[in-house]
Image (tube, rainbow, N blue to C red):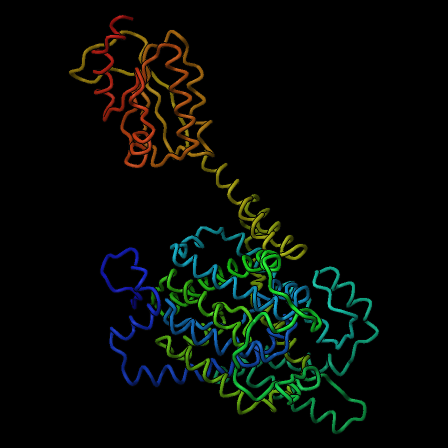
Length: 586
């Protein structure tokens, strides 16, 4: 299995080894000419596939399509260069639409770019703090719920362009947008619907007929030709295209559609606020954008690392999650200075990359250069792409993203508590936003986990028989055995049985050999129980502590209290009680 890290048995890399971990690993293993040729071919294929997706995703956010292309070029290049995954391809993704669209509507392009920049800084900090492995602790119902919710919102947002609706404004809220589209239903166009339906049909049928060519490479040019031909043949036939819907001024030149220029350096905060208004970068504005930046970082981390895991399974490699987070952060910090919106690892493009024969990050770098070449050379041709066709492409992306069958399967077979988490996360993602959906989902899942763990942890109170060779004891010694982690979800339950210990009990042995871990709440519960026993003049022995538990008890200096001892075995504790002056006096 190909690995990003080199040192055998090494659990974590040094910070200096993280940037470019995957590329340097490939180079050390030996990068051959045939590997380069395979990467170039894969990069060309993925670049062609990513070209319409990048434009469609930018339009889904609400920004002109070239900003999606700039994202794929700049962020895609730097993330591949510095990342920890050999085959991952990064760029704008559908999941980001539900986060970025409200930011753009409220704060304009400048606010969107600054949010992405801030999110990139947070991602770098997450990588430096070694948080890459924490995403695996997000429960599956949560990721499935918010992914399906995002897919639902994305699909609903495409109704406008699929039907050619003319809306007064662009409400960012899901239900407000539905109401606005319903009120504008009289403006629907059969021409737009026909082009959108044709595109969707070709996108769905092409993989069933041939897999030699990516479906978007066939569907979008075909739809553009039909739209152009229809406008020439039938009077009144008209569909919106990229060229007719967007125009950009660069210096004194006004371009319809996409400017035939590479990404140019710019200050993100000078891009303009909502509706072209001025944007003032201040502490108050940074504070207002912080919530969106955190959402960008959180979703970017989750989606990138999930995509990297998928890539590992397909290509039989192993990624470095911390290196990948740092690379994602750098890509999102650099991209806004060239007009790029937030980027993350893209599962569909990564899968296409692997299936096309990619074996190193060079393929993703070639993908970025391919898009750059297309922007410079073929920008006028891209302007003929119908808006309805790009909307149809996003509808298919949303359907694939939703994993509807898997969603239904979980609802059908999973425990009711997990189904509740799934549906809650899905509903809040649609009705409110992804941050609330994920946050509430994780909290609910944590409570369910704590309840289940409290059912595993238990304590048993029993009389102790003396071991062979040990002296007999007077009545009054009891053993309380605890099994399971003693943490805040289970501590009170595990210690509850000690409440039956009366003032006649003279010594209690707490067997902790089956306690793998203890947290602060467990320590407090244990200390409280020990204090109660000591108030009844009852001696206490803590027996068989595992490493983490013993270290915690030693830091708490619990054995320094009068009448309390930490022992290795119950026999040792019994010997202590027999030799104790207080016991003899009793």
